[in-house]
Amino acid sequence: MGILDNVVEWLATQIMNLLDIITGSVLGALGCDMSTFLRYFPAAETMYEVFVAISVGFILLNLVWQLFKNFGLGLGTQAEDPAKLVFRSVIFMFLAVFSDEIMALILGIAGTPYSWIVDAALPSIDFASFGSAITVIIGCIASGSVSLIVLIILLIIAWNYIKLLLEAAERYIMVGVLIYTAPVAFATGASESTGNIFSSWCRMLGGQLFLLMMNAWCLRLFVNMVGNFLANPLSV
Image (cartoon, rainbow, N blue to C red):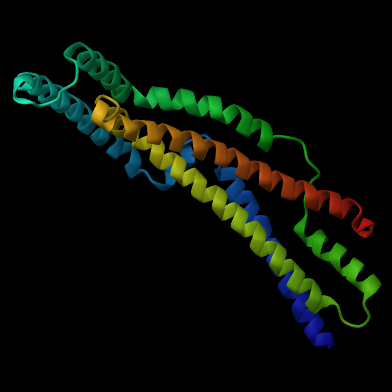
């Protein structure tokens, strides 16, 4: 069993080192700053200009079409009020053209509580020590080789922690997609017939930003739990 113990111990150490790398790289890239998103998806910035042009064209086309429909009101067609239509079109065209500044303001507001969560002082975490702590606990209650049991526990913990990190990364990408397609979303608000799309987009953006903060909160709770556990592993 000596060789098996050494192999299992080496595997457990590599798993903990891998978690160290993943933690530093993924958590360092998350947040309400889109610089990381642009670094991995540089085409989003170029395509943003395309979306702005499409949005302005859609608003103008809708404006002309709705005004044209007003001439057919006597034929039974329905159209929006011209004054309200022009007002909505001007407002949402302004929002579409300057959506980058508007989104930067929203990200700045959402990034404040996110920074509070991420920058909160917590006990330092060392995953390698976590494996040693588990070995001590199991060794106190079990006889014989415990390395294999430690490896199984570490795999379970590592898998669940990686899932949390991947979920947070997925949330960050979703926020980036919503941010750089914002001009099209603003364009849908220029018409009453597509206003529900704009409302749904607003709810989706707010929900994704909230869930991004909740993911960071959950990860910080996990780190805090491990830190407290390492400080007094035998308290379990």
